[in-house]
Image (cartoon, rainbow, N blue to C red):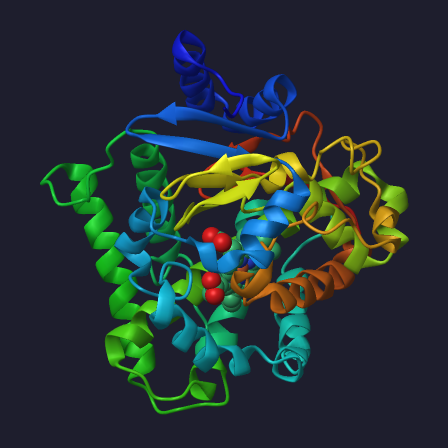
Length: 398
Ligand code: HEM
């Protein structure tokens, strides 16, 4: 039998997971090891912190795992059947259609635009000014993804995208904490806000896809049914900006704490930031048939989750795991031990874009010397993405 908390310990674990999810996951690994199971509401959950088993579910035996789980059903309330939430034949077909639009050469051709957008932001900074870097990075990455996808400038305030994304994250988080998440169909103020936010995003995307074709990712996609295209573009727009903004916020905070690293290679700084603060802190799969993981038998229909946040601090795979040391990426990490973008056939389609974008932006900001204001705390707000809690106040030094 798999180790893990039972009885009263399981209840305490669930309360702990709600109060402090990341701390709770670290404690579970410390107390029970790299593979464990416990009951959470109606389902038994298996947690994997063992890189070979993570590699097995994502790559070697990936056909035995799908996304038929409460978490992805819930994401589907606003992402529909886009690439993140679809499964089986639909996913395979859509991934084949969309992959060419993310070809390296197309992403490389975006670098001048990324630089220009960043320079425009910097030109509005004044020396000595204090800015909320978290908000500035959302604004910047939303502007960039809008141009990359639809050749349009998207503005968090004007289009209501910022508040819609906020609303969706809060909703998802509060529902995910309940045992039986109900779809937002009930006439509470919360459900109404969620449905409005969702409708606003869909309208915005529908307007974009009805415009004449342009030289952008949307223009590079082959024809597909309009509602499928709306789901795909919403998925790319949402997955493609907050994750990158979060990475940049943490990277700038880390560079402020480690100014000696300002002259290091920004590609490695991005990787080390993704190790310590992986925007997607937890993800999982459902087993279709039986399997063996870490020496234990896993039955069909089990929810098997892992956490990049915990894997990236695994003391057997990382020396000084809490330290910020970009040069550790001079060597390739062990397979399955570094999975900010997942791995295997369902790994993030935007990983090259995300790395290119974040590296380019940090290079542009190198001379700006953003410094955390005294007393600014660095605390993770574990929503769907692991972002900094509240505002991230930094002073523009140069
Ligand atoms: C630092 C930034 C990013 C991180 C950390 C990240 C992380 C991830 C992770 C962990 C997954 C797998 C999720 C799962 O298995 O449930 C994923 C999937 C995905 N990501 Fe990203 N992502 C980032 C940026 C982007 C960007 C820029 C885009 C697009 C513009 C994007 C689009 C997608 C899509 C479409 C999928 C689903 C792929 C599939 O299943 O075929 N992501 N991402």
